[in-house]
Length: 263
Figure 1 (cartoon, rainbow, N blue to C red):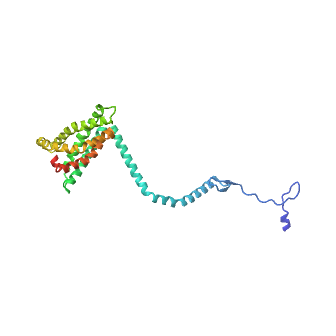
Figure 2 (tube, helix red, strand yellow):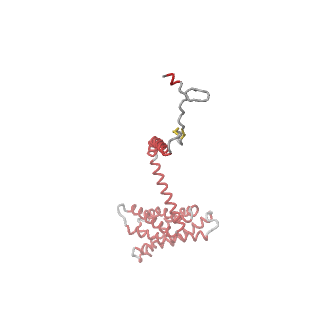
Figure 3 (cartoon, rainbow, N blue to C red):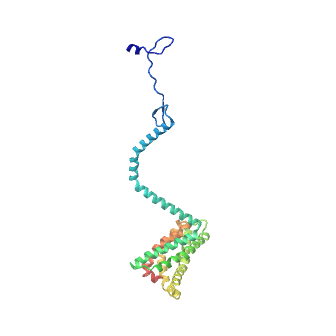
């Protein structure tokens, strides 16, 4: 029987031959690098690839989670920085497209914030919202819109070809302090007293407070305006001045024995 099995062969012209080994099934290499039977259908190949991808994703999930946990704080800070950049960009666009209303609103916020801080320094625990509202209205209706036109006038007529030269900056600063400051200080007192319903006190307030307020003004604003005219772009001068005004209003509250007496 064994001999018969050994002699089993394929007949040919030359007679009997040695047994032929079975041929290996043809294979194909998948995209993942695995050898698969060629006879597998496309659905089987797709299923196999999906299983391989799932295994790889399961292996890497803990690492991704660990990285997310480690860098979670950095991601949050990045989002905050991105939000701040978008806010500044939106403000810059508003300054370019609607300069007057943007500067008016900025001045309103600046004066309100300055008065809020000043009142906290005067009488802790007491806050007069109507006084804060009056100052905010001054910024909205007077300081922002009129200041916008004033700076445009200076840039147009005072050394327009060399606006940031030392001569131009000193001339603009002198004009601002000798013309704008006295006139607008009088307007400031008149506006607030009119809103208080006491227009009869305008003349007396100007007479008693103008010189003291101007002295305090000259201790701060010449330097601030030198910086503004020298380095701050025209569109950003009102916001810059409002930032300084926060300190200015607090300074007035200390030098004039309370903002109420100055107003």
